[in-house]
Image (spheres, rainbow, N blue to C red):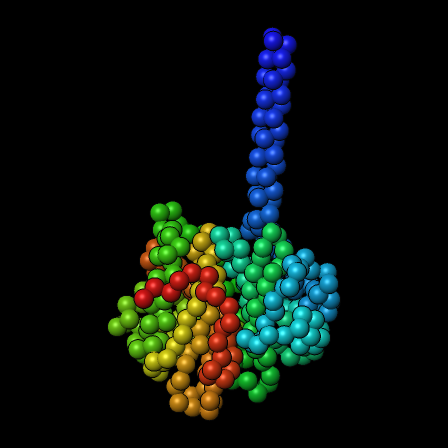
Length: 302
């Protein structure tokens, strides 16, 4: 009887130890399967290098990876994958570790043509499960000729001052006041909280704030057309760096953006202390009916 009890106790102990080991392995696997900031940034590097090399097979792709270019479903390896000849010097990342999204604005080249490339990598288990892109080509005839692609966006990577950090939800609410300002055509009435040093870069050109080069450079002084049908979606939130990346379709504005067209953009907002400090956008004209075809990373507050 004593020997049997000892054997039973030993068996129970062995089973308990096995359970602990299995739990530890499971937790370690779960931790390993999630990308941290370094991992997400590395995936962007791998992606850009793969595009330049015209070789998507070098990427850690999940099965049935979903790929869109300019909000249209495409086959990975086609389109821009076949035309890019190199990369420029500009790249601004937005890393959303909570939602596992690695996003970037990056400057690429098609021969002598500048390509302003917006990329979102939707990551699962450290693999790329979805790829969302927007492509803007800058020709000599383009209205905007980039002047700011050779250097980082001023203030976008600055550390957030102590006690000025905002919650994810608060960051999104602040960024959406910009969308509201576009909707009604007035950032003042929309309560959009620009910091005194705030400025905006669009397609590599300073269009508002210091460096704009016009008399009405102030973000509150601009003459903004009304965008009553503007649509916004949260693309990514870099909580550590205090940046919200929005996808926006500016909606119907007559023929402002070309008959039947609208501006579509991935626009990033550096936010801390309840204010917007810097803005960077890559945008292009697309049919007004263009939808994102990807879910918002976070609900849009009503």
